[in-house]
Length: 620
Image 1 (cartoon, rainbow, N blue to C red):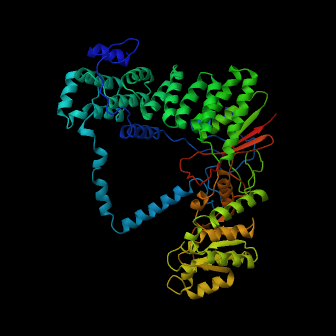
Image 2: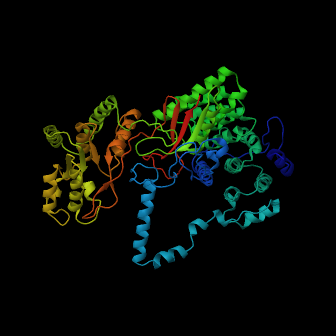
């Protein structure tokens, strides 16, 4: 039974009809609702969306053929078909040290540090921690007004007794609806609460209806959405963006999806709608076969400078796979060209598809009319060769034109940027430039203080070990440091620092200077062969660059040139460095093949790159 009919039958104060609105008074303060309630609704929706079971990621190096594996979106493991070369499973660690940019490295490092900290804490006496764990989490157990949601629909008398027994009767209805939402209560319980409130007060407040709407949309009770929309539009002069977003989502999941379009336009009068708002309607249009509306909304998202959600692209690729049977040939071809444009956008903006999106892309390729494509899930060798098709991927090295563009922008925006003299002085910067010009090109530029702090204790000993290893490899080394490093102390041994200066070129800045701009300048001035050694990921400097293209070139150059010490530095042991990839991790195509790096984990930080690939090859 619809919400309006149920309330009308039980309360006697509501009337159905063409307007589908309350006859009774409706209290509204203020007229335009924002703030805590919307934040509450969105926070709960976000929390629920994160409760999905993670996909299984175990698989072999390359799997091909739909009859031999499940779709990646199903999360099943796949086996090697034997049609290509065999190898280790993708879940095994490579024999070479992973790069600092490998997906999941940051999380693994953080977990390792937490474990070490926990062991240290236990060594110091873990009794306090045990007592803390046994202590009840009062914040987690706290519920609004100490209310307990009922397990069945209640009568008006039963609701009245609960309200009278609550700590805050004035807010009983809103708090109880919040609890019903949090506890995922049955819809009939929430309806009985609305009936009680309408009977008791003759009105339903905006906040109460918004919480009921949130419960309906999050619980998939989409048939209730039109009634709630009619009530709220007829009773309140305007809707906040949170309510509008919920209505768009709810309508988009029904046959009345087009009613979400005017709601989207209303939002646009106030603020720019979110990619999620657009994505909900795009998905609905594609389900109904209206590709023209779907692409028009997609173009609108791009014109607003927004990036569509990956679920939106997934709907477009799956819609492209279905279009073969539903649309004319010219429409199918146009849809295909638009989808190739999406892949180009991913490449230009270094966007990595999630595993479910990669599966949709594979489905579309394999359904393209007049072409036969085959997909395989694989990894890439350290030399940049696809283990599925044997193709060599694009080099990580910049072209001469790209390198010159990056060098010019870094010199202008980082080395000579507006705040450069907050990091150094004009005299010191000119002195360093003259120093670099007098020297032959360097092979490696070392962030001395950063490297020395790898190990607690005698920092000069660590720096000497690293510099000695590089020199033994026949490399010309520049060590950047600060003047205090030349002052003998417990951390900075005079003999160690003397040996460092004998083996490599050294430049010591003032103690208050920041050495990163010096490091970038010396590395770029030395040429494309020169690398730099530092644990600093340079994210602040990357953010100083003026446009997306330059930032992407900087990240590509960084991944191809940054050395990071692998493991511990100990006396008498050789120093190892993390591997630098020879290939670029980016969506790419060559001839009759496509290679897409995709996310199969939630552990990847923004500066890390995936290790799994979708290989697509055209057989005819």
